[in-house]
Length: 313
Ligand SMILES: CC(C)(COP(=O)(O)OP(=O)(O)OC[C@H]1O[C@@H](n2cnc3c(N)ncnc32)[C@H](O)[C@@H]1OP(=O)(O)O)[C@@H](O)C(=O)NCCC(=O)NCCS
Image 1 (spheres, rainbow, N blue to C red):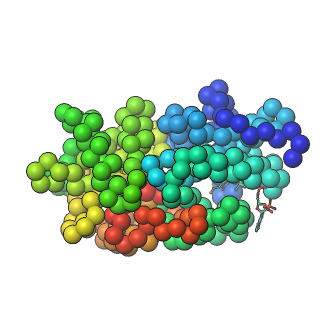
Image 2 (cartoon, rainbow, N blue to C red):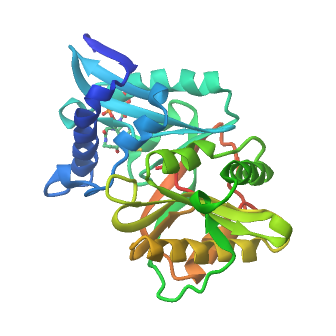
Image 3 (cartoon, protein in one colour):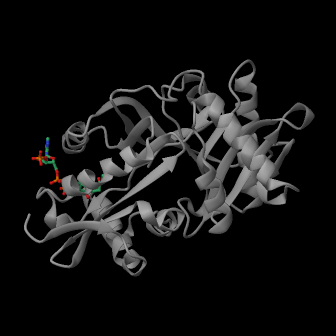
């Protein structure tokens, strides 16, 4: 398309980028007021703040018409939300944004790449297939009321720990056991710096780290008012991982209650059979279902022994 240019998103454009993101999803989902999509939750500002160098803008004749956000979790890379102004759909804007997204993932050298999308949309699935992504397992985004008496013990918010840097390194060491090079330091630091929430740290024997979860809550975060959203969490793999994961879920509920959130939201790729079953057993129910698409059909960290919460939205 003539006049279409893809470049880095600028901070001054965040308001319009946010409007386009809500309008695009709200239109696709058929909401009566498309711009009401996500209520007071936010993706655009928080993801831009987490890494402004990985936020792409499409402009047409100088006007912002679409964006995409790329996230690096160590050796893992994913992107989204990818959104285009509805009046310009099916004219190749998303393709141009994706053409600029792939080199970012290449440059990072991530070994596992993916995205979350709508499984029922032939358009979405075929769009991403053109870039080498294949649909694999479903990823339900699940919710349950917090509490009322989770009774969780043996956990601490990272912000209250005497040496948070040591705990942060332990979190990366734990995720590295799940998948080589996988770490979510970016999310842990974003939660702290942007005051999106905190990281729930579940202690094991002799000061070891058994599990952790980065939890966002409140307006202006990916959770929104009254909700605690587990952006990413993991329990140490190996024997008794299920028990560690169960304690992590309890701790997240206790954290939610302490933050005044009445609902906990957590997504899980259903290839992680144990984690998915544990969420079901605890009373989590799917609010929506997406599908994870993986580059080169790579399994990555989505298998029964990976006790990980995340949804890549
Ligand atoms: C999804 C979205 C980003 C796509 O943007 P877009 O600019 O319309 O996409 P493009 O025109 O670049 O590419 C669409 C491709 O899908 C193809 N397509 C469209 N409808 C299709 C269908 N029903 N079946 C198969 N392919 C289809 C088009 O032909 C095009 O491929 P081509 O260039 O090879 O012909 C946009 O529709 C949007 O913002 N949707 C709402 C938000 C959203 O769902 N974001 C993605 C979340 S994962």
